[in-house]
Length: 270
Image (cartoon, rainbow, N blue to C red):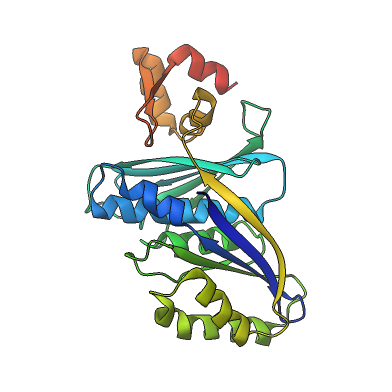
């Protein structure tokens, strides 16, 4: 069982529609030893990563790190060009919100250990979907909108991504967004196929492009946790180097532990 993203274009090919059925994400996160607060945050982070993985056609790996305002909570996800995703959740204080925290994005080619590009942005919302929309705006990429359509108890875990193309008419964009906002609550308990049927009846020129399987699985390795190194703050790095500390990373799926010595960390950051 893998997660599935179906891709469409609508309104005379002016707007991309990506629809995630994240049943695998829902199932595996709910098997983790996390409280409901942590599970919801982690599910949202993985949903976003799965959709952006399907959106990105380049040969690269991308990591996202959401850090809360007081630094007590961290969500880190990794996305690979083979359509595999993974992640870690460190939630220490349920009262420490994401609003006022930071989002770090790191991209590199699949063959590289070092980074090719790192960006930082502030988190203005406690909602991960709103934050990723704001991230696309701040980074001057194509405007991207994300709508969770399922209730938290719907195992199909359906999330919709809308991305207008550069030539899209603003009135068309506004109509699509307003229509989606007005009907999303009615789909909270619907199946994936019913959601597709409803959306295809609302928008013109609904055209199927392809389906992509996104695997949230435990094909873990040490390299897959390099994003944690690149997400460390300067203060954290200084403490590691000055005290010759060892950084530990635990796979959230199988529990396997990976360690990085200060010498290794310095090498990766060169």
